[in-house]
Structures are given as structure tokens and as C-alpha cells.
Image 1 (cartoon, protein in one colour):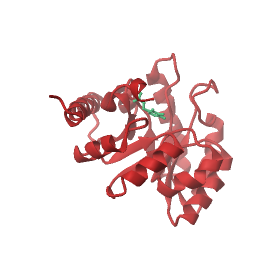
Image 2 (cartoon, rainbow, N blue to C red):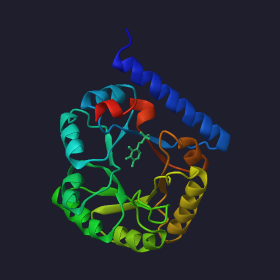
Image 3 (cartoon, rainbow, N blue to C red):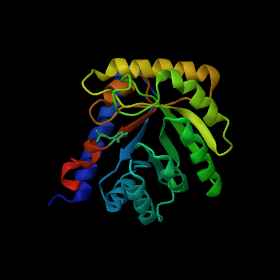
Image 4 (cartoon, helix red, strand yellow):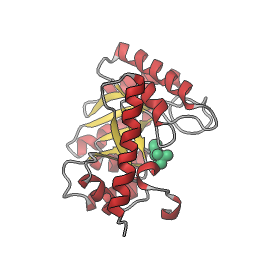
Length: 231
Ligand SMILES: *Cc1c(COP(=O)(O)O)cnc(C)c1O
């Protein structure tokens, strides 16, 4: 009988093979961080993944994430990434359990996250999410808004500016979009040398993201299976 653990172990191994092959193809010796996006899946799956060596998990809804993190309190080594669209009234809650927020895309969130982090006595790693689709709807700030947002994050006492995040635009080849993200990252680093993280690449396009220098891959269904049966 195949257990859930076997299933996750097989898929995780396949994803790690894909990442290793993509790194080899790109001549990269630095391994990107694999963030297992566990939205819609139970805390028991996160537990199994942690047993299999996963150190970083991603969530995209505050309520679900808060409940799951509470169930995982015994796992003090897990790094929790908030990757979903963030409402400013949820920022205080997210600041209580997330270690990294990938989706800061407007000025209002800077103060909300900073106050939330201060209240919880924490410092948050923050990525500015940039939209690569000319505002066609997968979230993110316009490229020309990134510099001001980055300055605001960098100037916040309880936030640490780490870099940029993007989702590849729908219906377009991802590689040119990730190449654009890499350029934006280089521009950002001219002002903020420490902001080296590039969060890009999901189940379908992680090879393209690795080829364009992603430091963080956000992989859900390729590790956990289809979310359809879990909605
Ligand atoms: C769900 C989600 C992912 C993972 O997507 P898969 O295609 O399942 O790998 C990555 N990034 C964000 C922002 C997500 O919401």
C-alpha cells in the first residue's frame, strides 16, 4: 500500500531532481531554496514534508495559514513564507507567524506589516512583488513602483528588504518574464545590495526560473498533488 508519506517522498524527490538538473543546465552551483506551497493541504502533510527534509513552507491565505502554523508549533525549525495576496487588515496577523512575506505590492502594506511585526516583537523578511503582466491581474506592483516600495521597506525598523517576487504572466512563455525580473533585481541591488533574493518559479516553470537566477522556488502541486480535490 502506498502511504501519503511515500507519495510525498516520491514527488519531492522528483522536484529535487528537476531543480538539480536545472541548476546543472544553468551552470549554477548555488541551490535555490525550495518553498513547498502547502495551501489547501493539512498540517499533517507539512509534518510529513518536514520529516522528509523540507525546511520552508508557503501559504497564501491568512486564516488557513494561522491555523496551520498553530498546529505546527512543535516544528520550531520551519520557515513560513506568506506568498498570497495580502490585505492590509490581515497584515498584523500575518506578521505574527510568517518569517517571510513575498507579496508586498503597495505602500499601505509597509506600515501595516511594520506595526504588526513590532507588536509581535519580530522582524520580517520582505520581498516586493512585481507584476510582469502590465497590470493584467496576477498581482504585484508596477516595475516603476518598485524603487519607492523598496526604500519604504528598507526604512522600516521591523522589516528587512530581501528582494523581489513575481508570478509568470498567464498565457505567455515564462522565461522572458523571469529575465525581466532578473533585470529588475539587478537594478534594485544597485540601491540595496543586500536585497538579493529572487522568488520566482512554480510547478510548471521552475526550470525557467532557475535559468534566470531564482533564489527561491514556490512549488505546490508538483510536491503535494492536485489542489482540486482539496478545495
Ligand atoms: C499556489 C501558489 C504557488 C504554487 O503553485 P503550483 O503551481 O501549485 O506550484 C506559487 N506561488 C504562489 C503565489 C501561489 O499562490
